[in-house]
Each structure stands twice: as structure tokens, then as C-alpha cells.
Amino acid sequence: MTLKIAVLPGDGIGPEIVAEAVKVLNALRDDFGLQVETEEALIGGTAYDATGTPFPAETLKLSQQADAILLGAVGGPKWEPLDYSVRPERGLLGLRSELSLFANLRPAILYPQLAAASTLKPEVVSGLDILIVRELNGGIYFGQPRGRRVNAQGEREGYNTLVYSESEIRRIAHVAFEAALKRGKRLCSIDKANVLECTELWREVVIEVSKDYPEVALSHMYVDNASMQLVRNPKQFDVMLTDNMFGDILSDCAAMLTGSIGMLPSASLDKDGKGMYEPIHGSAPDIAGKGIANPIATILSVAMLLRYSFNDGANADRIEQAVVSALDAGYRTADIYSEATQKVSTAAMGDAIVSALRASR
Ligand code: NAD
Image (cartoon, rainbow, N blue to C red; front, side, top):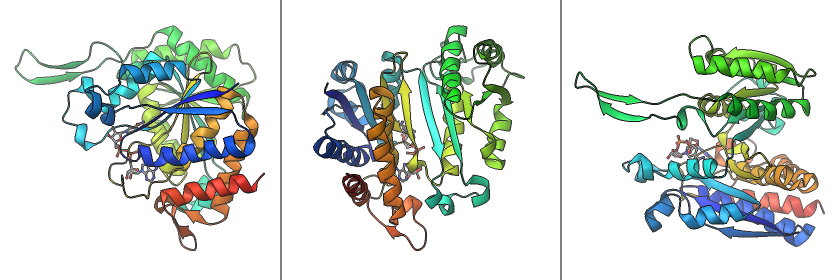
């Protein structure tokens, strides 16, 4: 069976990093017999400029027809003055909700070669291996009503709604418990149950779901404490289960523990395992076009794509091993550079990983 992948490079550094990930896919196709086809489409600000919408109908169609989606990133200052309804981020949120990609898996792993690139002491982060499972289709980013208005006192007001149904909580909790079963069997659910009724329900439902997973040790933590614990003693965590907004924030924090946000892939899955794969970082407009972005998060997203959507652990392992080999050989993009290593461009890092992949044949 030929795997069809919709490739959506997006904005900013998106096209630069996705090009390197496609090189890796092509190497697997040419040298390892992976049967794969890729087709590109527009999303985000680039799509808005070309078509007047950040989420063109053709992009949705291609994504629906594909077996999996590989995305770069969207957004940038150029599109910030636009109305929210046509902002680049709407393209991404639209894709996540149209395809019901409700489960976002964000591993944060510290490669030993990068212990010096973390802002935390090596003993605090070495061996770090956390999986953040973030709910992606609900919560305050989607809740209605939302908007801006002028209140009775004539003041401007902004408002959003944090809302979760119990079925939404239950389905993401199952994903997190299943993931914990395959790892360290510890799950920490993050909420703010002392203040927010919605997350009080979150805690209640997670406890109910835990009855199906007696082997998994469940704990709960308020989000403010969790952010502190992530920096104080991150290795206490195995799987962290969070809602949409808390996960957005905590996963960036976890990313920094690993040295650079440019290292971390993610998977967003629907109930059948179809998924969209993307680096957790944004479009990095500050470095776009300079050829210095780190492509590793996107390349590792391809490994997740093969593992989760195609059950192809062998090729996923090959990619992950090739990344380790390139790091072992001392190649570093600017964001992970430290003394006695070799600073390389985005394309040179992609080439080093492809060479390591080919050498593993
Ligand atoms: P960002 O993740 O784009 O960048 C944060 C910092 O990390 C910047 O200094 C950037 O240079 C650096 N960085 C990010 N990726 C890197 C990489 N691969 N290699 C080296 N350095 C890297 O976050 P931001 O600056 O807050 O947002 C920029 C734009 O991206 C905004 O328009 C935002 O809305 C959008 N955004 C998109 C996504 C997405 O597409 N999934 C996610 C987050 C932010």
C-alpha cells in the first residue's frame, strides 16, 4: 500500500524545515523501499495571501484524502492585523477540528548530547523523558461564546469560554492512560480544580476513567504547581494529561528543558489513529529565510507519523537513530550549538541526517 501524505509547509520557517523532512521521506522511499507519495497544499498566511483564506477547501480535501498530514508552522507578524477569523492560526485550528484531531502527543526527551544546551543543570534534566498528552479540540480555544464587546459601563471587554463535556474529557483520558501503560505507568493529570468548575469536572472524569487502568498510578496537580515542578524536578513526570490551553503552555516549558523548542515533534490523532504531525514550535519569523532553523523537530515528526499512523516502527527507529548519529557526529544548528560542536545550516543538518540514515543500510 502506498502511503499518501499531505504536506503543508505553511509560513515562516515552515517551508525550510519541511523541505528537510521531505528529504528524509524521499531517502526512505529510495533506499529503504518505503512506499510513499507526498502532495503539497497551502495553509496559514501563505494560503491567505494566495486565496483569501488561511484554510482553503482544497487543503481540507487533500488532508481528508491523505493517510496522514505533515505540517510545518503557520503565522507571522505580517498577518497579525487581520481579523481573527482569517488569521493563519485559524487554518491550523480548522484542520484540527475538521479532522477531529483531539489527541495531541508531545514527547519531551533530552538527548544526552544536548544536556549542555538546556538552561537547567544537566543533573536536573539528564535522562528526561516526558510525554505530554494535550486535549486539542475543545476547551477555551474553541468555547462559545467568545469575542469582544463594550460593556454597560462603556468599557471594552474581551471574553472566552472554558468548556469541556465529559465525553471529551473521557476520550483524551483514555489516550493518556493507554500511553502510560506503554511507558512508565504513571499519569499526572493537570487541572485548576480549586478555581475552575470545568477542570473540577476534568478531575472527576479522569478519576472515573482510571478505574479501567488499575496498573497506572494516577496523580493530580494544579497547573501552577505543575509549571513549577517541570522546572524544579521534571524527571518526576512520566505522562502528563492536560487540557488544551494548559498543555499549550506546559509543553513549551517542557520543550526548553530539552535544550531547544526546535527538537520536539508532535502528533495530533483522531479516534482511528489518523494524524497530523508537526513540530511543536511556531513559524519563528525572527529567523525565517536565514537557513538557520533546526529541522529536527519536523524530521522527528516524520518518525512519529510512521510509528502512529502507519505502524512502521522500523523506519521510525531508523529516523530517530539517524538524528542521534548526526548529533553524535557534532552537527548542531544555531539553537543547539555549544562549544566544540559544528554549527550547520538547516539544509546541512537535513543532509547529515539523511547521510546517517543511508549509512545505516
Ligand atoms: P515560535 O515557536 O515560532 O518561536 C519562539 C522562539 O523559538 C523564537 O525565538 C524562534 O526563533 C525559536 N524557534 C522556533 N522554532 C525554531 C527552530 N526550528 N529552530 C530554531 N529556533 C526556533 O513562537 P512565537 O515566536 O511565539 O510565534 C511565532 C508565530 O508562530 C506566531 O505567528 C504564532 O502564532 C505562530 N505559532 C504557530 C504554531 C504552529 O504553527 N503550530 C505554534 C506556535 C506559534
